Each structure stands twice: as C-alpha cells, then as structure tokens.
Image (tube, rainbow, N blue to C red; front, side):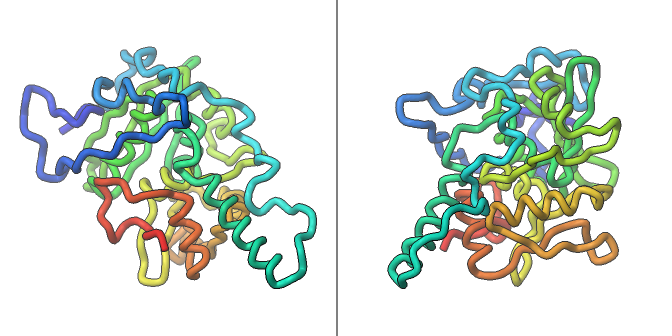
Length: 293
C-alpha cells in the first residue's frame, strides 16, 4: 500500500501496523527573530503516489527552506578539520584548544542552522539516489525500517518537499519526493551522466549527517555503521575524507566485508557524531541513535 507524505492512507483506511504513529516532534528551532524553517508546510503538504510526476511543481520549497545555494557544495573555510595557525603550547592552552574544537564541531551540528535543501547531500552520501526529468529532479532512498520512513518524511517536509512512500518487494520501504525544480541543482552537482559522484569540495555537517544516519545508520556494539549505496564503492574515498574533516573519521568497509560503508568507533568520535546529529527523533528507537555524552 502506498501512503502519502502526510502519513494518511487513502480512503480513510487505518495505517498498517508496520507504520506506528510516532509521538509528536518538538517544534523546530529557528534563529532568533526568524520563524522556524518549513513551519507552514509540515502538516499540510501532501504528495501523490510514488512515481507520480503530476505534482512536480507543487513540491517547491517554502521560503523558510530556501533554494540550494551553490556555495553549500564547497567546504566552508572554517569547517572542522581545516588547518589554521598553531595554538598555545601550555597545558591550559591545550585544554582551551580542545574546548574550542568541541564548540566548533557543535557549531556545525544539526541544530546550528535552519534546514536547507542542500542538506539532502547527506542522503546522497548514503544510499540516496537522484534522477532528472527535464528541468526537474527527484530524490529517492530505500530504507530497511519503518521508523526511518517517519524521520525522513518529516525531515523532507521541513525543507518544503512532500514525500510519498511504499513497500518494496524485498520488504523494505521506498521514500520519494515529487519531481521538482528545487532539486535540479543538487542533481546537477552529483550526477556524472547517470552515475552518482560527490561534487568537488563535498563536505558533511550535522544536518547532512543526521539525514544519512536516519536513512542508513546502524548501531553496533562498538559504534555506528554508516552505509553507502550498494553501487557506491567509487564514492567511498571522497565521502571518507568528508567524514574525517567533520571530526568523525571512520574505517572503510569494502563490499565483500559488509560495505560499502564506514564504521565509526572510539569514544571521542562517537561523542562528536552525537553532538553533530543532534537529539534523537521521536520515531527513532533509543538504541538506533547515538546518545550525547
């Protein structure tokens, strides 16, 4: 059965047990003096069935979400991992440097800025796919758990992009946006013909990591596994460099070892990951999301 992006099945039918309704999410926090991003569309947006192209122009982002800015595709000059002048050498200075680095990482966390269409690069770093039709594009991702559907549909709605979803033949769930002009710059940056590749200067921040974790993050006894798409082995080096620059360097896994994926372990890296991705979404199980220290 195909469900709409508002979480309501057609004809008033009760939702299947596979899709329990999560508790309401807390209000999105905006910057001082500005409304929260996507505030007017979260409840009202409704998309057509999966694969429909008739509502392409109705999925334009709201003013709060904003269009994709090409500058978002390049590394910010002061992002974590960027080298700078040498700091103090005293013990007190070393502690201050560590505190500054921690504050800097939190500054690039999921809660540090309003949601943006550019954040969807985090889904493309994982198993997400983008396709083009004329002057429009559509984002899709297949996930393995119902809670991921809830989280991703809510995150897409915050960016003015209603989504639909349906069960797949292998008992997973496909989440799709409509075709929209808002996603065309993202597609242009990531596609080399029909092949997905990270653009030059690709970087990860908290909002992008949050989406990647929601789509394909797997909790393990020693840490977290961030999965790429099954055919994304050639993207692994660029994505690994972006993880390291964000302060969450991971160990690459080849396809024959359960990848392509990156395994993030270690107390410091896991603490940074938790700070970057922000609070657990209400629909996500507590064991599926990194806990803040």
